[in-house]
Image 1 (tube, rainbow, N blue to C red):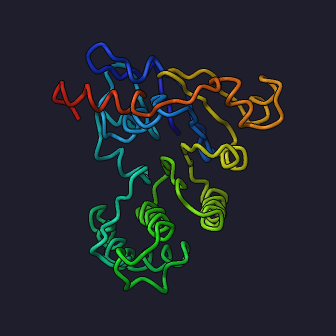
Image 2 (spheres, one colour; image 1 turned 180 degrees about the vertical axis):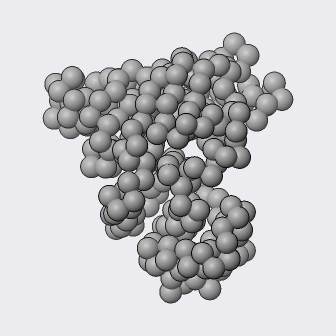
Image 3 (cartoon, rainbow, N blue to C red; image 1 turned 90 degrees about the vertical axis):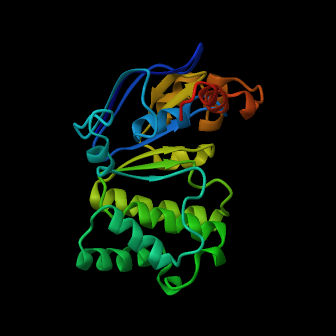
Length: 262
C-alpha cells in the first residue's frame, strides 16, 4: 500500500531524511518510531504531499503523490501532531466542511457525518462549538473527520500526545475496530512505546534521518535482547536526551525558511 525507496530531503547542506526505504502492506498497522528530531514528521509530510522530496520515490496505492497530489490525497486521511479543527465551528460543521472539500455527495456526507460522530462518541455534542471541547474530544473529532471520505490509508502523527489514558484507550479501540472491519492501512508515529507494541504489526525505527531497524515488536525485542519495546528502542537509539530544537524537524524548518521553502 505504501512503497518508499531512497527517500531523501535536504535543506542546503542539512539532510533531514537520508535515503530512507520501506514498505507498508495493505491493511497493516505500521508504527514509525524515533527520538525527537529523527526525521519522522518530515517523512510523513513527504508521504502526504506537504513536502516534495529532494530525491527518491513514494508510491501510495499505486499513485505517485508528487506527480498526482490531488489523487493521492483522496487515498489517505491524516491526523496531524498539531490540532487542525476549526474552534469556531461546531463538530458537525467541521465534519461537513471536510466532506464538501472532498466532494462527498450530500446524502452520503450527512450519513457519514452522523455515523462517524457516533463512532468517536461525539454525536451528542454535534451542535457544540469545538472551542468548548477538551483536547481529547478535539482529537476524536479529528480522527472522525479524517475518515469521512473513506480513505484507504490513515496517517496518525503522534495522535495521542497529551491525552488521558481513558481517551487513548477509547481511540485505539476504535481504530482497531476500523482496521479489522475495513482493512484500513494505518501508519502511525508515537512516543508511547506501549501503543506501538499493542497496535503495530511491524515497526520501523528512525534516527538521525535514517531507518536503523525494522521488524515486528517481538523481532526488535529479540534483536536487542530486551523484554520491553521501550528498552529495545533505547538500545537502538541510545539514552541521551534529545533536544527537539536541535532535531531534524526544527532544523529543517529553520533552514527551509532561509531557502524560501515550506
